[in-house]
Length: 176
Image (cartoon, rainbow, N blue to C red; front, side, top):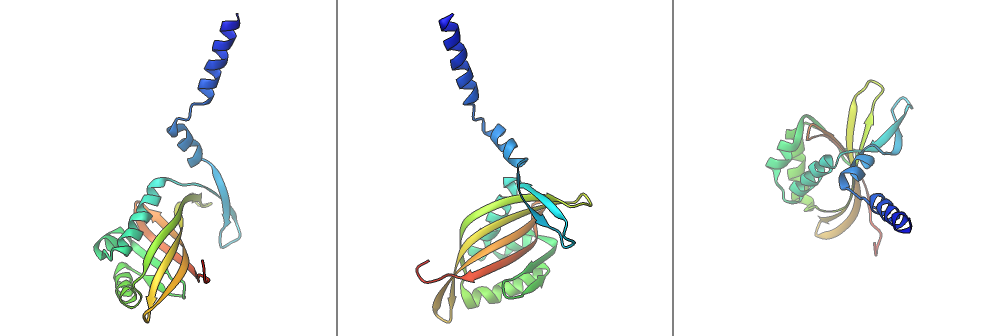
C-alpha cells in the first residue's frame, strides 16, 4: 500500500510539472492583460495577442535600421498612415518613403529594441484590432551631435501588414 501511495504521489508530481509550451501559449493568448478606452469612453478589454504580429513589427524595425525601403513599402498596408512624435501625419506609402529618405539622411537613426507586446481588442462592432506596443532606444545624429531618445511605438497590424503606427518619444537624460 505504501508503494502505491508513493507511485500515485510521483505520478501527480509529474503531471503537475507538465510545462507543455502549447498549453502555456494557449493560456497566454486568451489572457486579459488590461484595457483601453475608445474615443467614446467605452472600456475595452485587451488580451494577449499573437507573436506573429510581433514578428511583423520586428521585421519592420529591422528594415528601417537597414534602410530597406523595398521591405518597408511591401510591409505597409494599402491604407497606411503614421503619426510621428512631433505632430507628423503621414498618409500612404509614397509619402512615408519620402519622409523616411529625408529623415534618415538628416538624422541617421538606429533603433535598439527593448520590448515588444502583442495585444488584441474587439470593438463593440465586432472588429478585431491587433496591436504591437514596443519600446526602443533610438540613437540619432543631429548636426553632428549624438542624441539619445526612447521611443514607444503602437502599431496596428492587419493581415501581416502595418496599417498604422504612432510614435511617442522623450530625450533620454544624461547617464540613461
